[in-house]
Image 1 (cartoon, rainbow, N blue to C red):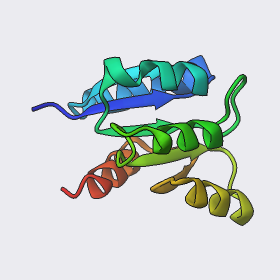
Image 2 (image 1 turned 90 degrees about the horizontal axis):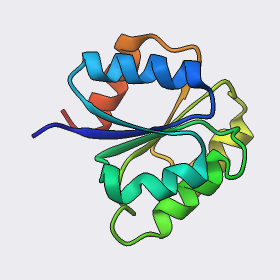
Image 3 (image 1 turned 120 degrees about the vertical axis):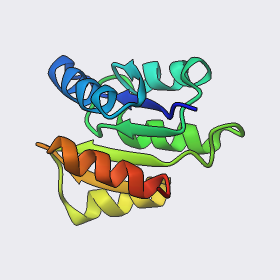
Image 4 (image 1 turned 180 degrees about the horizontal axis):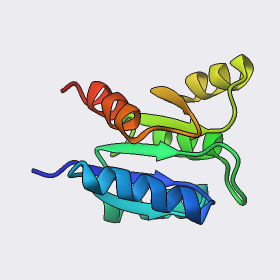
Length: 122
């Protein structure tokens, strides 16, 4: 069974880079342009893992995490934050909202895949 990942980022370049890295590693990838789009994509994507940026229009990554955790169906799905931000206060806020992990951009494909595999318990 293919692992399904929902990647949420407002940057088309980052979405393309993440999508390519994940698809090359054999994941099925769904993309969303911001938190609102990400929440709307949950039922179609039915993700095993979510990757989200923090700074996005309409709904940021914190809002996305809080909304996902408030759902019944996806409340336990691991959520990785992929962002240029690295402040301890932001990491603590994301953790408090329910984020599983934090990766700072730019990222290396191998490191991203390794973190995903670890979070998925492989």
